[in-house]
Amino acid sequence: MKKILSILMGASILFACTQVQTEQTKHASEKIEIVNVVNNGNVNFNDFFENKTMRLDYFHNGNSETENFAVDKILSDGDWYGSTKTLIDELELGLYFYEVIDQESKTLIYSRGYASIFGEWQWTPEAKEEWGTFHESIRFPWPLNPVTIILKKRDGQNNFHTIWTRNIDPKSRQVNPANIAHTEKVDIIHKSGAPQEKLDIVILGDGYSTEEMDKFIADAQRLSKVMLEAEPFNTRKNDINIWAVETPAQESGVSKPHPGVFKRTPLSAHYSSFDSERYVLSYDNKSLRNVASAVPYEFMVILINEKTYGGGGIYNLYTTVAVDNKFSEYIMIHEMGHHMAGLADEYYSSSTSYEAPSIEIEPWETNITALLDKDNLKWKDLVEEGTPIPTTWNKKEFDAHGLEVQKERNALRAAKVPESQVEALFVREYTTQNEFYAQEEYKDKVGAFEGAGYNQYGLYRPQLDCIMFTRHNVFCKVCQRSLNTVIDQYSK
Image 1: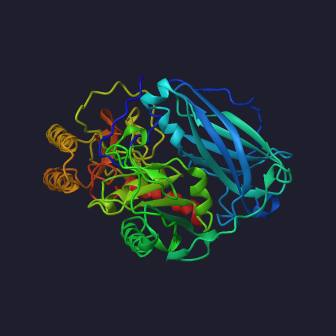
Image 2: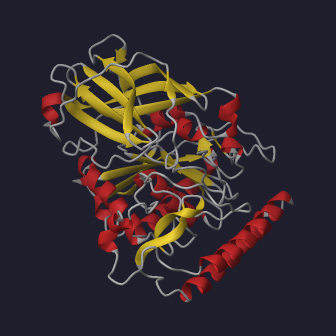
Image 3: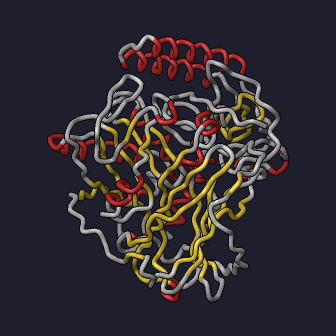
């Protein structure tokens, strides 16, 4: 079954990378060491770690059928500010997963799930024709003794299997324990307590000139406030810290290759990622990590000093947001859903809507389902008695409207009209969607509404509306619960 890419709302590309994956990628980077891991749950931090962060930088390359790994550097990323209690990741989200194993006892001492730019790029047409190389990092507490890193990836059944291993002796001459001498200016946006007991977010900025640092801080404060006013962040704001690190550029703005605008900025953020005009990423992982390490962080936001609609969000990597667009607040919240909880896009409408092939496995994402076993719906505890599964809604009329909007949007962009005209179309779409929802019998209920994850048919979302589906700045109950479990992982 082939994976189909859709660029639908322009702020994100493919986050649910595996729900229809059926073939296993070949791995040829190193011989895989088989380790019989002992998982006793969360270990005593002081028995295995010192209060320092180890960062393993590596190159991840390959094409659509092959992937390889090679170590770049193993170095200190500063003090350890993460949880010293929740060391084992029981959420198991993301396309990839890494484990840190104490070599002597074979004990699992740390683990986390994540996604990557390579993991998305591998689905692009370019990956079928060319090889690509991306720089990536994984971070974990500094081990006291030699460890084995086990890197896993989901297979065609969405189960993790080992694709790479690496032994690390923290006392080796190949490991650099020196810390960076940070000179960046740091601002506290929201402080609720000690970093080890909170979920920490770092905000970086790209395309802000030296004269625009006040604007960067104002944008960071504004978008942080918007996020913290949305649930579940509002209820959990006392479990969250937010920091900002200033990285002034020589001039305003970032590269926009489609219209031929090119600039050199500190973080190398750019539009046109994967040839998608509104998808904003930075491939300069090393610069991002070095700057971010000036403060405690688990999650990263990159504010883009641009008006052009755009952004992106990759699980456990970062969120990007174009700050001066009319919908920047929506982009911020929506992309944090991807970045923090691995939430899938729930939208599916495009100018070329299609009937997707049959979905044969259950997606790993917590907010969409193939409904292969409706008696064991993954969010069935939130479904009220009497709500039909699948849940009826006026999908035909909604889809027809969505198709017309996409045609108009494509025409506007082809004509290279001012951004304000595209924004006006989105506002009209927003208003019409509200009119549709007002007529729906189950508009406030949790159920299983067909249409999700880029698939018009065969995948289902939990509620009629959610910020992962439209530009309404509210997470559904299932998405809120997923975000709460992530906040718990870093604050308890």
